[in-house]
Image (tube, rainbow, N blue to C red; front, side, top):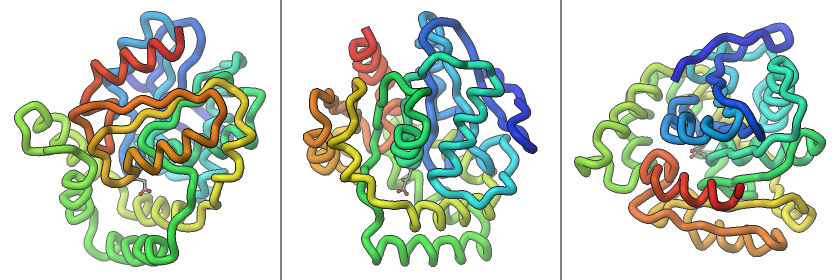
Length: 264
Ligand code: MLT
């Protein structure tokens, strides 16, 4: 995926952009980058303008001067769309942390949004013990660097990361995490720890919405996502086989067919 640096406010964002038509914005999870959408990028660029940014502090986007919150990330994405002169409402497709940013995008930038796709994510905020774990993880990554995070996360993100079918994508995700600035990982954890509960917003969503989850996702399990989906009238729900938390990367064929059918 060819990327470029785009000036956004007083900083830059690294972004891959291709195609033309109804814009789709793919927003990565934590602590990943645009490359997790590699199997969607070319496929959807055949009929859409596809935009895959690195969120500030991740991939090759420099960290922002603004404190990181899910809301500030949503504002930065809206500013990126402005900088790219994308004025038509977009399909916002966010995975996990990208989904947390999606709720804020829906809340604060509704005029920029036509469809919402929530992948392997949830509307609830953290339980107190989870938030405490994130604060500890932020302290630890500043001390130990990214290797322990990369090793532990790959095990959790994928369904069967050692399976021959998964090995090369699991290794590439491991590399992305290894190369992420530990400070951004710490800031991301702290930002997720203070994110608000957005469950009550779900009943107010009136745009077309799709939920997608890996059948073996243990981070945001299918049952929890199904319960969230039931709160959005008319939303569609798709379970992807042979996939854990990274459904678009683990089973791109099934994911892409589902997303294309939703957008048709
Ligand atoms: C992600 O994939 O973005 C993370 O698992 C989100 C989280 O830690 O809640």
